[in-house]
Length: 406
Image 1 (cartoon, rainbow, N blue to C red):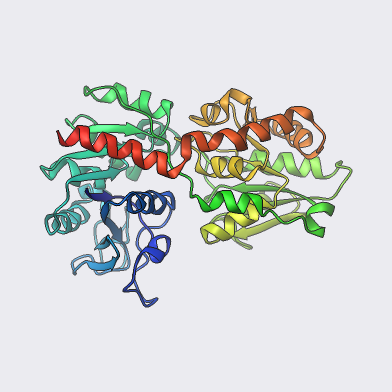
Image 2 (cartoon, rainbow, N blue to C red; image 1 turned 90 degrees about the horizontal axis):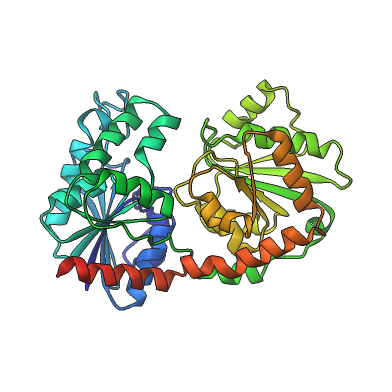
């Protein structure tokens, strides 16, 4: 089967699948490493893959770049760098014409390739191109656009909401990454029921989980890891920082908070907001944005993983911590998180708006002797692969492809 994949794909994530690279390639679309896992899984099953993504460093009205590897081709299609406001000579942002230029570039690339099926990820520009192609297609829903708009109301999220509304009311077949997203999507679409197929975790994560170092630092200083990417209202980091600050003052052993993501570099937005809230930076390490494998090595060394987001469509960061055997604490009302943590059987569920609730959960996890936390972590590590095994996920998708192609 020749599978066309449309979605956010970083060149660095698929570099090991390419043979004609020299290090000067466009960066692609950062932020979804699991897309590379899915592509690699299809290749491992003997399929060919052509992937189409956008790149904001290319001339928006120029030509796409094409990179090749064994059984794999990557199209990097030009995109405007500005989402809303004028920037870099582009008077209009992507959202004001619903990604028209970006969709034209992607559609041109798709027209140049023969594929048996198109599989688009997210219900926005990639899905619009697939749905309008006239080819057999499947769209995976990765978020609830109405919930995103509610938590982050901007012209950009409003435009995305309208794009998703159009896609979901088309006759396209859909999957969703969690039951809560399937339920949200089902309210919009009149097509057949939406099956749930989780995002895949990379197979190398199993090896990393077995190789967690028992170094001197790990035994002497506990670490709380937070991976949120951005400091936003719906990522909700401040209650977690407040809980840590309150705990660290009374905890009987040294403990450190390590925060990761673009807004969490020294001197960046996170530090500004933490200081503005009157919280000391003592024992808070701002680690910035790391390459995916490097980030997961850091998480594997943590004593506990804290995720304060108010909503998650799936929760990749939490799933990765579960696979690494790191006790997880996340929101009891945060979208798919209760499902992912098996209603509390695979991690602690708390009200992430309340610092006192987070502090109590941190204290329990950091004790190292709580039988409940030990049992949760063991169950999480054992069962997460039942839903995220990359080969099993790829097989489920290919079975659906055959249904769609009939």
